[in-house]
Image (cartoon, rainbow, N blue to C red):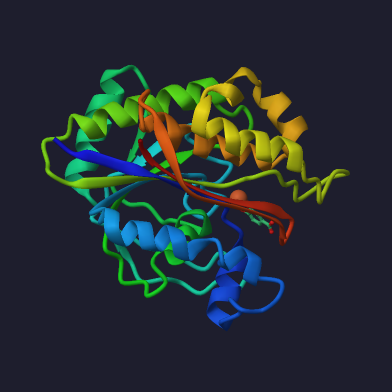
Length: 279
Ligand code: DHB
Ligand code: FE
């Protein structure tokens, strides 16, 4: 059976792609952000995942407002990104792990989640930037299964529903007949709001409590409704539900913190990074 080696969750901001392309990792604005990643890369080099299941939200590249699935899973042989504007360079295509995609889809639909299955799927900055941060040479050592959760067009799934999806995905991975080592990633958040009267809104206290909760009390944020999460974290801060899904996939056993980083701001976003492993 497959083994889940842990979580890496981090923020995704298009400007990070621009900074990577321009080699700005040592620039004073960017350094505190990029400095978070080497300890996580060192851990990944030892933990040797072959597969990454990635919870993320598409922002209009693959799904637009005319067709917006609540939960969608990729089952494609490979994933490409495309021009999203923003000047973000496109990355080399990333191979899919189709056997796990279909196993996961069968298991999770078998647990009464209504997933959209995607045999073709473009992936946007929410998936590609975390990949480029974890593997800067862009020679991907993992095949991937993207799991897209709508945090763009209301109504959004509740945090507790997303947590339950993550638990079901974790059970599916653990029941996959394979000796693969699986990393579960979540991308988005932490607090940020890009538009409206509260544009620029950041809530450091909430973010730090959320980071802390993932280690010891992972269901903590599920007590909030989506509207409460918008109030506390900003319209786009609700992307942090991806971290809940990823954490839920680890299951109920104890976890240990491998590394964390928190830095304000990257563009309009409070950027977070958290790597967890089973204790
Ligand atoms: C920003 C943050 C996001 O999560 C995103 O998807 C796009 C932009 C930002 O802070 O600029
Ligand atoms: Fe986003």
